[in-house]
Image (tube, rainbow, N blue to C red; front, side, top):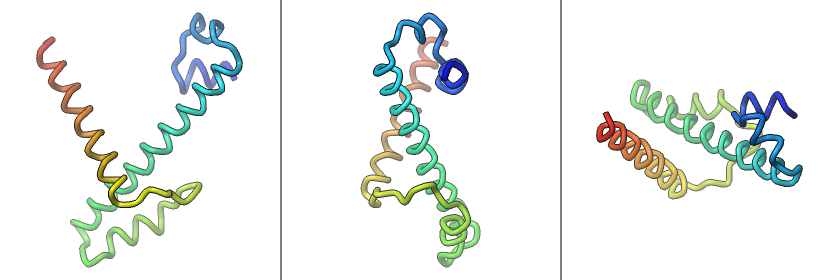
Length: 102
């Protein structure tokens, strides 16, 4: 439990020991959902790139068949577009903040 908290999740020991078990489990659940969402987005982005290179539906089909997720996603195309848009907005905001501070 501690190796996961200090390593993957990135908690400091003070933060970890200040959490109750229920709070840690919720934090862990949120982290796992975040990782799954990022994996889904990366898979779709990779499929789009392969589609552009290979074309005719073969690139996307290859990625989707060869990169199986643990569980099937319930996201439809509109939700995927919304997630991609939100990710782009976060990255643009981060770049803008970096530019203003730098």
